[in-house]
Image (tube, rainbow, N blue to C red):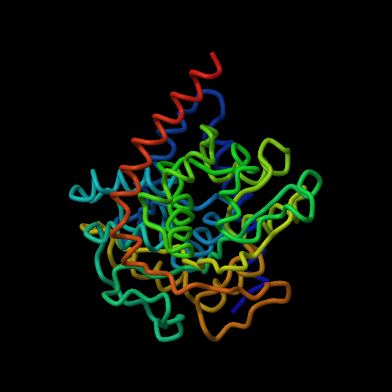
Length: 355
C-alpha cells in the first residue's frame, strides 16, 4: 500500500478542507447552504453518514483517505460517545446514520439493538480476543488504560501503581476524571477498576466519587492538561492519549498498573436502517486493513487489532486482564444510576462547603 502516499494525501486533504472552509465562510456566503449544496451534488449511492467520537486528528485523515480511494462523500458528525449514541437511538428509525465510529466496544455491546451485524473482509486477521461473536461491532484499535502523574509534584515513593492506590486518601480531590455522561473512556475506567479489584458497582462507584471530591472534568481530553498543570496530580487515561501528551511536551509520566489493566478496543458498527449500508460495509473493511492499522499505530500511538502486525518499538508490555465485556455491558445501567444519584449529592455537598 502507498503508506507514504497515505500520509501525503492526509496533508493535502486537510489543506483542501481548509480551502473549502475559507471559501464557505467568505463574505456574502452561507456556510450551511454551501455544505448542503456540496452534499446534494454527490449521487446518493456515493454518500456515507458517519457519527464519530474520535478526535479530529484521528478521524479526519482516515475518512479523507477513504473518500480518496472510494469516491464516497462522507458526512461527519463528531461528539462524545454517550451523546452521539443517544442521538443515534433517537433517530436511527429515520435513517439518521450509517456508521458509528469510536467509543469502547462495551458501549456497542450495551447498545447492540442499534446496530446491524456485518463481518468485514479480513476479519480472520483480527485478534480473536476482541471479535464480536454476532458481528455486531468491529474493533478498530486496542486502547490500554494507564495511570499518569505529574512528574514534578508527585514524589517517586507516592506514584500510584495499582487501582487500589487511586483510592488512597492522599489523592482525594486530585484524580483527573471526566464526566461519565461525556466520555466512553470514563465508563471503561470504572468497569476496569471493578474487574481488577473484584468489587461491585455499589462498592466502587461511591468510593470513587468520594475520591473525586466534586471535581469532574467536562471531557477526557482535559485529563492530561489537568495533571500536567498541577490542577490534579494523577489520572487515568488511554495509552495513546498519554503518549501523545508526552510527545507534545506535557509534564506527565506513564504507569502501567501492576495489578493489570484493560485494553478494550474502540469500535465501529453499522447502524440499523442505514441509508447507505453498502458503503458502510466498505468503511468497516477499510479501517481494519493492514495499512490503516499500521498508520494508526505509527501516527496515533494506538495498538493494532490485527495479529499479523508487529508492535513498533516503545510499546510496553501489558499485564492485561481478561476483560468481561458482557459483564461490563450488563452493569452499565446500574453504574450510571449510581453515578447520577451520588455525584449530584457529592457536588451539592462540595458546593455547600464553598459557600
